[in-house]
Image 1 (cartoon, rainbow, N blue to C red):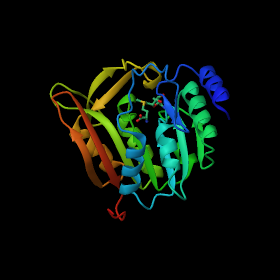
Image 2 (cartoon, protein in one colour):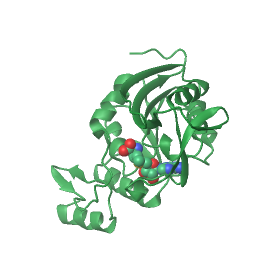
Image 3 (spheres, rainbow, N blue to C red):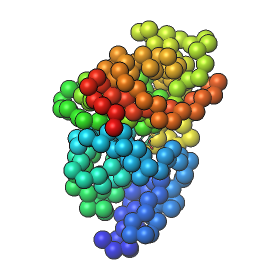
Length: 238
Ligand SMILES: C[S@@+](CC[C@H](N)C(=O)[O-])C[C@H]1O[C@@H](n2cnc3c(N)ncnc32)[C@H](O)[C@@H]1O
């Protein structure tokens, strides 16, 4: 595909959330940039495979425009199933894969809050970045992931205070009305729940991830960030 053809396809798929680079040229530069990737995709892919070097069959949740998908697809011997809930995001991700000649990725349009995880099969590891705090029942999403995957690379917000929280199913959370500045990066649900740290850790453990390695964390009284490499019993740390 030549430069003019790429520019035409990029325009057809607008508006983009993020720009991307192909053959040294930056495309989709009219992207709103209201949503910035929280970690450069190659850094995240390196951290993912650094944590789970045995991972060959990989599940990705909330793939957006495929930036992380593309970076992970470069790992030799890997097959990726990437799920995304917004069709327009999925179309842009498909184009990015087509442009780069990626053949080890399957992209699928699904709502991870209502899909049947059992039908997906088994995965060595899952990437769940920027999604857990966009769902209504985050503990159920973690249990679903645990039902199909031995390892989980989780990058999420949690709520920093344990005061005045609501409780459902034994999990304490701060109720949040979705207002992410970038509409295409929001959850499919409007009212979502941000777990506090003890509830997040309990949900991970109940999902089967008994070894939770904290790779990064930023603690504040309210909006906190955490990145973990979580493993089931018997999966060694590298
Ligand atoms: C904040 S973005 C994170 C994108 C990317 N994973 C990252 O870390 O940069 C959330 C993504 O998850 C998708 N998403 C939100 N709720 C979803 C759901 N219930 N099922 C599937 N995808 C969902 C959004 O459309 C968006 O692409």
